[in-house]
Length: 111
Length: 119
Image (tube, chains in turn blue, purple):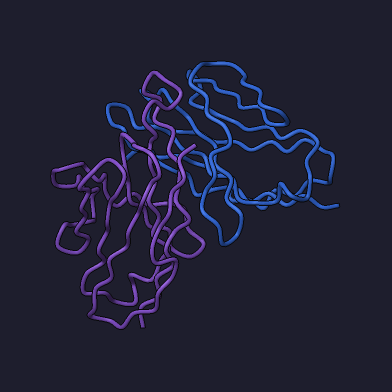
């Protein structure tokens, strides 16, 4: 059973701080990793993907991948109240085109 | 990116009945998937909708309960059959756009979802 683990939170950070969201996965053969943001009552929105070890930056978001440690993270700089949402980590299953999702981490950014 | 619509957006159904959910994309996609998201839970993949052939179901989901069609590259349906209150959930379709970012990287984009309540 392939697993993707996330701390359920909530992770509370003040406005302007850096939010750090973490994810570990069990499928050592996985090559593709995704972060989705889901606002309450809405469907998931893809915000970042990463395929290579290291960092990938897009605006205020940075995804970090360490395949040896089977660890992927998402950093949100200058956090805003509008970033308050649940963040889902997803991992492409090796040998398949499907994704396995973690349970998500709820982020709360206070003004 | 692709614009994805789902119909209906929500419905309240009686137990024992069936509901068909439609997923329409405004451009061709390579892959389409159906997920279920129960209240407060993460996403569970029901099946991969294959064009012109039977869907590929995940463990715990069967064709008799969740028949799926995908007649072309832009449209798919999911039917929830013989419903019970345990089927109350949000049903989401997702797609992998044709071309994507290149290299078959499998980014999935989600439709707005169908909120189903079974009484």
